[in-house]
Image (tube, rainbow, N blue to C red; front, side):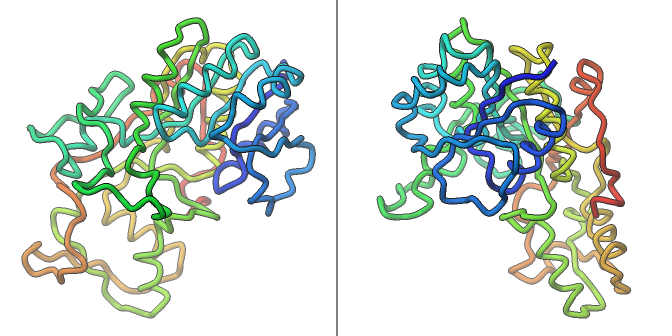
Length: 312
C-alpha cells in the first residue's frame, strides 16, 4: 500500500538513502528541513523548509499533507520528542524515531559512565537501557556559542520517553548501529584507511581491542530497514534494532577494509601497555557492543540488500 510519509530531516548521510528507498517503493514523501542541505535533489520528494525547534508553527501545513506516518531522523533531546508528539497528534497515525545503540546500559559500561559488571551480548530490544542520562555531558557545560552545545542535552532515551508519554500516538523506536558508507560524517573507516593509503606496512591494535565486537551497518542496509519499519503497519509501537547480520571483531573489520582497499600490509597485536598514547583503547573493550537484529528480521522480514563485501 502506498503511503504519505513526512520525513523530518532526511538530507544528510543516510537520509537520502532512506528517501530514495521510500520513493522507489512508491510512497509519497515530503521532507521537512531547514533548506541548508540540498546537495541531493531527490527528485520526486516534496519539501517544506522550516525550523525544527519551532515545529508547532507548521502544524497546519502538516495537517494539509495528512501524512499516514512521520519519520523523525533528527530528534536528539527530550524537548524534540515532546514537540514531535504535540505537533502531530491528530494529524498522523503513528511516528517513527531514529535512535541508537548508545541507549543500552552496555554502552554506559563501555564508555565508563555507569559502573558495574560486563553485560552479556548480543544486545536485544529487551536489553537494559542506560540508567544515566546525557552520555556526552561533561562536568562543565559547553559554552553557549559552542557548535556542540546541543550534545549536553542529547539523549535518545530521553527522546523516546518524552514521545511515549502520549499513549494515543503509536511510536516506533529504531536503534541504529555504527553506520558507515558514502557520506559518513564521522568517517568511521578513516583511522585505518588513511594509514593504508599512506602505504603503512603494519597497523597496530592492542590485544584487547583486536577481539572487541561492536555492531555495524552499511548505510544502504540501515536505510532499507528504516524504510521498511516506517511503512509497515506491524511496526506500530514496536522497538527494533537495525544492523548487519553478524559482527566481525575489530581485527577482522580492519582486515576487511584492507582487502577492499587492496592493502598488502598486516595487523599486529601488542599488549595495551606497549601501544602509543594516541592508539590507546577509547573504552572498556571487555564490554562488547554486539547487537542482534533478529526481531525486525522475523517480524517484518528485513534482509540486507547489500552484502558486507559489496558494502566494503
